[in-house]
Image (cartoon, rainbow, N blue to C red; front, top):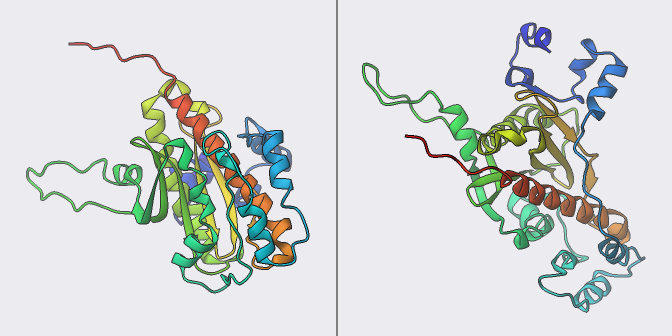
Length: 296
């Protein structure tokens, strides 16, 4: 990894101590066996969905005739607002057209279940091109009071469409791109491999500062939405204290027709639920620390 950091002419995530095994550059430095070991060594495991919740999600796996039929089925379900909060799934409109919609419509008409499912964990969802406080601290850590030289301007970085916080801690974020993007497009390279991993890293390092003893048990999460496609990205520090690793799920597609609602939507809900469970576990781990000792 040190060798790869010394050789590139262009700025690369490795310069920020970010290792993404899916980046093809690593094929030049590691064998196939070594990359396989890196991918699977202490890889964050997505939580297992409880049987009762899985059975409920599977009840939507039917051949629906219309959005109205699905809406009626979902609307007739009655759940405990606290104990069964996770069963409150979105209701479907078979006239929903999102294939060339502005970001606002994509987020609030299509992907709204991403932030709705977090409402029961005291998570605050902050909308509207939010800047991460962790990123701001990272980019301005050398900014200080002026003496001989004028104080430098405060630097800002990537704007996020949703920022999830519990208390003062940033755990999760969502970035939405308007158009469907392939894995070979510049937009995907810039967001998926460079900008957003750095945001995850800065958020993770702030969590580590709150509880350094749990450095290898903490993680941060990103929802990367490109039009009607979404993937979940998890960053952690498997070993040691500094080198972060990226783990990605496959890409999942949002259903825009009643014909594929059962095939496409249930996996999306499962993915979102699992991300919430990771966030809850990280928050619990973060608070598992010894009290600070006052020294004078």
